[in-house]
Length: 160
Length: 292
Image (cartoon, rainbow over all chains, first blue to last red; front, side, top):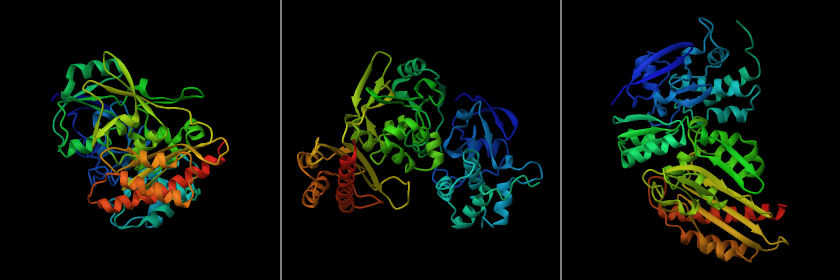
């Protein structure tokens, strides 16, 4: 099996990688690039813990072959903060205690980021729909929804 | 663990058909891979060659005209269908169906062609598109053919697609006047696959008093999506009052051929078919009477 050249941009860094075509995007992000913020949960496409943005849209990185991301721009949870400054969603998650074990958090943040880039003022229903696939087994959904809603309502605007 | 394969990318229909012809049974097409990668990970499918058509722009389109109806290229994603204003205006049932299909992440990457070619009897698009009298365009290197979706599914995870054939387009005729289409699935968790699903299309006569045409399609109730043709016949020329609704839904339940599995028993599925058929025939009937 021939390795394939894959050129991807991840969180504003360019990479050229030779990888086996069977490698999933989540494996390349975690094992090749060391970006372990993206979590591998069920590994069957059921839990959305591995959600990343691929050219701005939310996808499950366990359900995309890395070769299919060739030429794309990927954003992982590591790409949300601007150096030491957490992104509004990250601050809001902290303020609202929007996690317990934290395993689903990266995926939740990425799904919410995709929602807020698509809709400026999403409804509660939009928020629920955007994280519908993201399973939180601590069942802390209410605080997560409140955290996303707070950002959507502009409570974390331009505060540095 | 996914087994090794050779990766081939095709960016045009022509390249894809050539590669399919070259590798025949030794290859599989991948587009969004939302179903295929699961099977590959389980070792159930282990192609020698994987032909990637995710970037096949020629097949990514949604067109509509008042004569020919709807044409959807098979690499169009579920999310693109869900967000299409053309589809919202002319086939709102497809938008509803997409909104309840899996997670946003799956709809963002998974495609309509992949869903149909996967041939899962619990898939959502199959029953809805059959109730809309849809068809598909298929091609190999030599020829193209169109077949009604009703004849597309052969058995569990099996379709009429032959070696070296590619699914090109989904075609849906214009919805006739005084017609309404309704779809619903029953599941425990919203947006999961249906334990049973039912799609109903009803056309009333000119006066809106009797049913002129009906299609009742059952999902996850047999090895493929199936029409409950006996139940349809019982509806034609009638007004679906409470007595007729009872008879039709009993008939549809008899016509189903469901399995026992971890989600539900056969008996439970038959009862679901009955309940959903009754509900959706009523719903489609009421909407059809209000349609122009």
